[in-house]
Image (cartoon, rainbow, N blue to C red; front, top):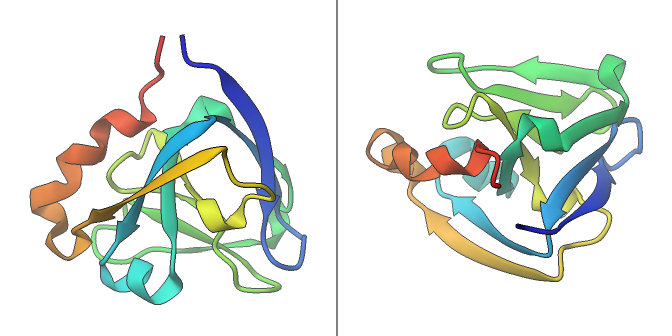
Length: 132
């Protein structure tokens, strides 16, 4: 049984705040696709049930492109993207590790080839599944 801790985070200006339950040791993806490379997003994908928006729904703007499955959410005030619904895991939430108030005890960053997304996305499918 994996022990989870509750972490808080948000955008730069504080309009958007969230909490997420994550283990002490996490693996995050550093994706080289066009949007992630330009924004510096470090992907911490969790089941949607472990994510809770605390405030700022009205401050969020949505951006979609390509297939429209991913729901990229940005703060309308400061422009930061603290989380979004990923195309690879539409049943989960993808948290930007850099938007957590405090990082987990141990973080392993792995490269993800998002430039070749179709060939690699299946490797992320397990990330939004509940673990026993």
